[in-house]
Length: 372
Image (cartoon, one colour):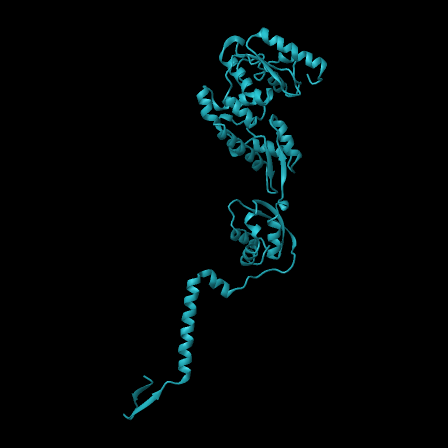
């Protein structure tokens, strides 16, 4: 129908035709509705792209910002953090720069040094290179006492000894187990740590206790202690003795000697370990000790005090923890390391056999080593 009839004021009929402008309005409305439908099918992100461009800085940036990529961060989460820190101008610019760089999928967790008002692509270039991670790497070897570990942490950080001692005074905050009885000795796990620029004495010590918990879980420490008839804390003390006294393949055998001495009265339950005499004196007396040194009245001196020391005497590694949890089978009550360089250790069931082995050790000391 191309025309419409209406009545005029005087009652006469007249005809009105559609003007071309009306057709243009209708077509415009149809295009608008159709376009809106396309927008809906593409989602909200498409609307954002239509309404705003990816604003980006053009320069290399100024100043310095320490930015942390946290575990589980998506590219969008990084972008939001960078925008909030004033590093990138928009999240969209950062995500688009990441889409253009395949290696952006492998950005590592950690801290990076960037600048304010950087071009998004330049930020991506920094984040994809692991060499740009800010690391304070500290290696804690097996067998260190708590005091020695703290000395290492002080040496390789900006914190003073008092700051670490303050953190140690709040053992619950570090996550120590109840059976540690508030003493971190033996529970700061020996490993290599990457401490970031925001690390504190508390966070550093907590990280080491957390790593110990992983080792305790891996060695099934609690279940094995129950199976052997000991408390978990006692197993940790045994592990520290093994760490101090043995190496590698000899660890499970030394473990057995300790258990035999604890459980049978052939030696009056005296462990007679030189490592505990060293700890009781608070210094390193060497591989052997003198009669006077072994006479010290101390709960840590296993030459005079039966049973286990009150706490671990140093930090055991996972190998020593495994040996404590899984002692070898054997009838031995004695052992002696006859070669300090190789760690070769000989075991004996009787004192007479042990004395023969000890003579071999003394001969080694006279002819091959000054470490005895």
